[in-house]
Image 1 (spheres, rainbow, N blue to C red):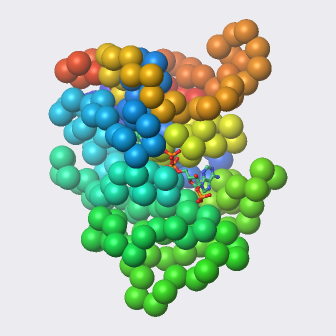
Image 2 (tube, rainbow, N blue to C red):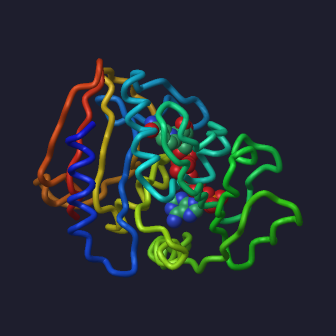
Length: 231
Ligand SMILES: NC(=O)c1ccc[n+]([C@@H]2O[C@H](COP(=O)([O-])OP(=O)(O)OC[C@H]3O[C@@H](n4cnc5c(N)ncnc54)[C@H](OP(=O)(O)O)[C@@H]3O)[C@@H](O)[C@H]2O)c1
């Protein structure tokens, strides 16, 4: 979609966090903000065109990040399949290296980069991924800013964060998202939300992470909403 391509190109030109990649949050949700029915019970929120857009976005980015929760519940391939384009570097946040020995990710042409705790057991020889021991932040989670710095140092300039719920919440709380591109499905689900507790404090939209310069377009039954993220 040309309008989104132009938006991302401009966001990249204006991006001035010298040692961090441009971070795009991109996921699908229902009208009530549900990402899935429950953990491990995905629902199909995207039309064919919206899936194609997601894969187009994957191809534009250098790396694609998801949490271990998404790997365990959905076993995603994290490849570009519905459009022409390069696969981005798969990146997994997995504190305790719970990544199973056999997932569809192991068939990915690019070995995943797995960010884990400094003391996590090291990967077994021959494992199809590379580990990055990472310090904790003040909340005892893998330090996202440190992860972004490491990704940048390893050549990643455009990072797409696709989910799931815990990862989206952490990135929003940390104020580390530059742009967001959301696929909205026209249904109320009452399922797993992207944030379990309030992300701000106040009575105005501006008191919460919000979009600025909001744009939207319709793709089949989905509404695509995008803009710059402000905390
Ligand atoms: N609708 C969509 O577009 C979409 C996209 C993706 C996923 N999903 C859905 O999201 C659900 C999975 O969400 P989830 O919350 O269970 O899993 P998740 O967000 O994929 O992963 C969360 C896990 O990542 C690890 N982690 C490591 N560092 C972290 C940090 N700094 N902040 C947060 N988490 C960190 C934690 O596990 P450890 O402590 O073990 O490391 C945490 O439990 C699935 O049902 C999936 O279908 C939907």
